[in-house]
Length: 510
Image 1 (spheres, rainbow, N blue to C red):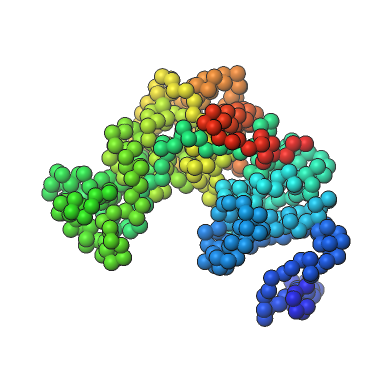
Image 2: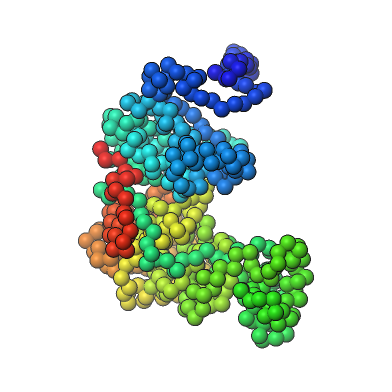
């Protein structure tokens, strides 16, 4: 019922041969006002203790756009009142979920929502799902479904919940499979609960690439060659450039463009590279009008620049990609903001980041953009407990890099095309691909040995997880690996003096 008490009647034809259907919708088009549930339905909220059931399909709005679209006051109300002060940049669907839980009868209620799949990922999960698990139980979920319409490519999650959690009558089902429990991340519950902590020991290793703020910083290979030929000193500020697409599609992982990079240099120092500075002035006219230090990147990432000084074999992973495969980067290259950069891990790090162990952690704690993997360093790498270094990982990293480059160059394909084949169960009798799978199998064994977890049978094969078929360890091995990694994360966080939350947080124990 609206504040004015009005109801609008709509008639619309259904498919041919069906009768007209009268649809009654409660509306108040002239004036939308806040709805006070206790005043509107006191019998439900006061006498009944809340709604017996709530169903819906909340609207979607990215968290960073809420203030601009709906106003900063509403954004603050959502965070402080609806989310009870829970910090995080949740998308709008997260606040609708929190509101539904607050309005539902706490002694026995049901909630069924069709939401964006982001509900179980990143900040939205931290705001919407993590705080309510325990108060509500998830008895059924589908995590990553296509929107049932040919006109949209949206991926959705469907969630069925009850209050309180103890009223789950039978084993929950996740994507149609019976599981012991369902976590806030819409994952099968396991023996280890809680969320991973960011480890201080992992700081200053992973970085986001440079954010230019203006495409004028990028120049063609021919223009770069002209500037480098004019003065050898120009190589200090004219560097090869690679973005996420280059990393995944180029046979050698290199791009066709170069970047003008003055770093943190002041005006006089930058101007001393006269030829390059003149090109920058010509290409960055709009930026020059708006920004004082126009010759510097929008986000120059001084910490990344300092880390790269003298570092051998930096590693890059495309921030959004189908396979999130790491690759060694040439020294002196400039990485775009769509590349996650790892410094100081060397060839052993290439093997580690290529392993099923690390990939399992990424798929568990990272997020997704449609069907692509989104690598967020703060959620994935900064929480990932690193193993002890060993010579086997260094050796296997070198072999992987050499063999993989040889295959890509001979077939003129990039990492995406290569790993499409590696993870294709129908691709058999290909010596190159068989060799690459064997290398990955050996890497996984070496990583497990580095953790001293040789007792876990890996049982490699083609296994499907989150609707992605991959050559990887078995589902049972994946669950055990994730449990041990989370235990190790909590152990190291305590050693660092961090206050690790209740181990049961985030998981329903039945």
